[in-house]
Image (cartoon, rainbow, N blue to C red):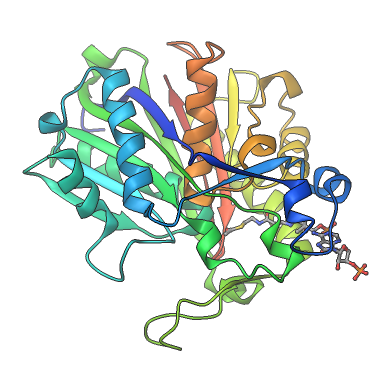
Length: 324
Ligand code: ACO
């Protein structure tokens, strides 16, 4: 409506060096490679080194994003970082990234919507660019999620991994953007379902960090329904359909959820970008990591229409449509 569109100018990602296979995890809890692969599609996950913080992963990703775009850190005037696993209770992890990048001005803050965090951060940055408040935004999802896992709970510890990814957006006039850019979002939450997926600790409740607690099969049931309704909302708003979508870049929680949503929305399997096997569920980092994988291997090309979706703790969920 404002005549300004947020255009994705670069993507990037970072995965910590250490890889933990399903075989290795089978030595920690009673599980098997076969069970994990069959129920989730996950083969391995990356684990941050003891001295690596979320801001370190995010900074590595940010440097790669900016290099990809040919944009200098000084040009960035906004960082919106989605994370559930911040370096500290305060200040925002985004400000640590700001300092590490050497970006003096602008504003940097965190968004917390767990696995939907990247889409919430994208919607936030897009809205701020469209109002003219900022011109160049880094949108990052970064997690050291394995630090809030209960490594004796096989129902959760096999699912998650650490990582960071993101995009850089610039505010362009619609004339300059052409048909590129972020087209629309739909983000929603339902706090009444929070007990199905939450962390049992926090600053003002227990004074501890807590661990992830999840009723996985109940989360699974809500996931396909909520995600599909969000996708239908972005289709209704734009008049686009699954036939128009070139690539489906979902939150990488579980291959069965990805397949279930693709089937329900009549998205051909060949359009689905799946990286869950390589890094598990990296929460807010999973969408930008998958996006970056498919952009760098040449599948997603300029002009392609991308549909993304996520569902996570809160419950929070959403969908986004953008043309690269
Ligand atoms: N290895 C072996 N057996 C296991 C494991 C494991 N790692 N985990 C659970 N089981 C067992 C259970 O104990 C249960 O055994 P029982 O029948 O003897 O009681 C059996 O497997 C079936 O358990 P379910 O929980 O019903 O298994 P399900 O098929 O639902 O798969 C899973 C579990 C993979 C967690 C699935 O429910 C799921 O993926 N849910 C969605 C999770 C998700 O997507 N979360 C996204 C958001 S995360 C966020 O926002 C931070």
